[in-house]
Image: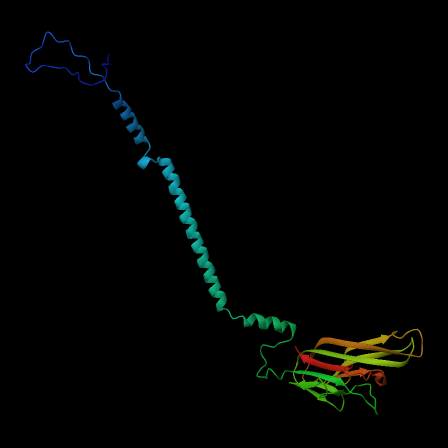
Length: 267
């Protein structure tokens, strides 16, 4: 059995108890050599190159950056949630009545400020048609208390001339409807429906709205025919203006309930 003498291990010899050499004994054989120490050194050297706890430096750096990205994302989410909560608290502090009041004021159904006027006593009027039996006038008269008729606020109905007088300057929606029945209708039958105002300092009336109806009868003369006309608009009225309704053929006015009406309200 041979051994590579290049390894740095000491040789071992066998000696007797007397300190001398025995001539009759055979020379001892060589001690076998072991090859595992160098392998252990190579394993240790590979372990040192893998870094701390067996993890390479590049892998540790990547894991660290991933943790930093996760923490940065969590911080950004927390910042966004904080801003949203702050905006929500500011929106709750704003009073919603301002927005709603402005929108209602634009469509003309609500006044946020009534200058001390009762909310249930606003300037408005709705009159029903009055059926005349003895005297017929082109300027119509109205019922102010029958059925759904009423007057409230700064408007007054004057029965003597059929006028609605407004006591405040402002923008008003004025409307009127009339229904006429022609008992002996012909192709030439027609009528005029007018809403006008009388104003202080103005000698003649001022027409606000007018409708001229013709050609509504059938081609067979002598037959009855019913037609109607509706006028409505938003107009500027001055203090103490008096609004009237004229019909060119008042004797043809329909007697149907709620067929004829006249009114206004302040916008």
